[in-house]
Image 1 (cartoon, one colour):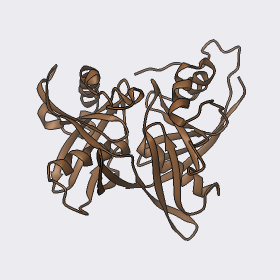
Image 2: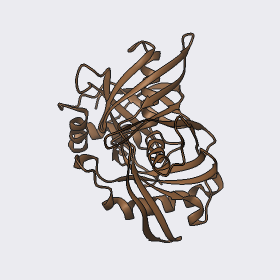
Image 3: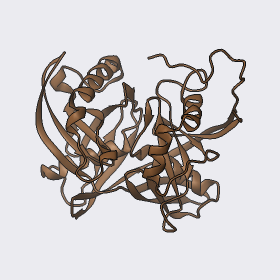
Image 4: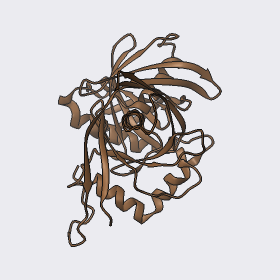
Length: 319
């Protein structure tokens, strides 16, 4: 395997590893995601970058690829320790920041094609420095309400909504927990349990490639338009940020319940105390358009090597 160079960012505490050197064939980004899922050569690079000793069980990143057409600045195939996701808000914020900071795109609008569709990010700068990114997501919508489920922590009711990926929202208090670091291990365990139990219910109405429950959002209500959450996605991976696509999914629910007025902004906090701001900007056919704002910061660059004599190969994951 050739050496792989990366640029690392974090968005509100959640890592995002950017790779520009992997060629993935396909007519669209959604097609390229399918190819990545079935290509041993592509997936070997993902494993190298996400597994220990070069990564960790909560690593996240993406392969930068061409957009679907000339209307996009570029596309991205998102990945995590268990495979390839359909959407990633924190990654979108990191990529838009990276694109402006590297001069790939000028300050202002950055158009990115992701597996679930096209997102548009507005990069806000102060002088030459990127201060924040506000991205408008694909349409978000409510799929199912008050789905009953028996869990190891008792009976719960889950709401399932889409924000580029499907999430089940469950009040942390309903499983006897709060979204605080002291409850982290228990939150991850119950989030993982709920995700797999409800996974078959998350069926996309038009594109089966987008089906499946991506994660569970366990949330605390902290007041009017103020929540704190932990998104537990993939197979027990925990988002350190407030979760960008998850924020869109939460906004769809709050809007449908009349709990978020016109132009009202949701303050969405993470388990580590970072914040995204989210709002509904338009009602459209099939849902609502949401806007999520956050900031990303470059944390480093690296070139990773695989010594073919290494018995650990592309690495391992401990959870």
